[in-house]
Image (cartoon, rainbow, N blue to C red):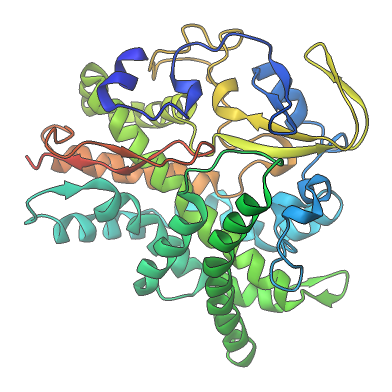
Length: 401
């Protein structure tokens, strides 16, 4: 693993990629005002106990750090909601991501992949993220939602502004840091909210056979969802619906470049590609961390965490815990079993995981068909997303061959 870190000059803030972690599995970070969980069995416990480790983290974040409620709300974000409300909202879109529905998308995913690769054929460089890994999942999720995929430059600008910032995770910030953080988030958030609110209003007038119409017409306990919840739900689907696949595909290609013998095996045995993707998800976990808030005092990993504490769950570190994964620094697609937590666990297991896996499998197969060798271009260094809670490339050029 040290070789791949050095080879691509991976930023130091992605600490879980810089050698095996030493130290406690759970510890309090006084400078950040929160608890960090790094161990696999500890995180497995956290994600499986939503009654103790609540997803409603906003209640323990100091009010001084929150934007005005009339300008910013996470109402409708199922990632921030606990049972029983969580289950009711999840059911609204679960039918759009069933195995059958996702499987039926395979021809469209393949067609879009070929179209994007054809469009990039004559360019001097093929840049994986902008030419394929970003537009492919955006087109798919936009078509599911029923919004114009041609607006994907807007979606990318908003996603970059919200996620691709070099910011440390902390609830202890100065007033100046809080103000800068708020301003960095509010402008893209408002633009995205206004955009999706416009489309939601249009669906009320002219319903269509799309996911946005389903949200507009949905009822929970006999009542339609408020507009704010519809918009926030759509934001979550749009962002999460493409960011995971974008990082998954970029990270997997990176691994196959760094480990050419594994690329040869995948090329010779296409049935092994799902396992290649799973190992990439383990080694380079796209959403590297997620938050929880304790509802009571609890013992975890030999320490006691008080009630009402913010807990950062470092999934990427847990996925490289030697207590669970032998030789965790190695990229080993033949690892069996491979019970990584990249898509979460329990009630918040990623709704779009089947779609992300399918997009990754289809695109990777086609890349192997159309490239004699997946090789990064040494004249255009790989660039990584600087945000410490995301693991992924934001630029990865391949040599056309």
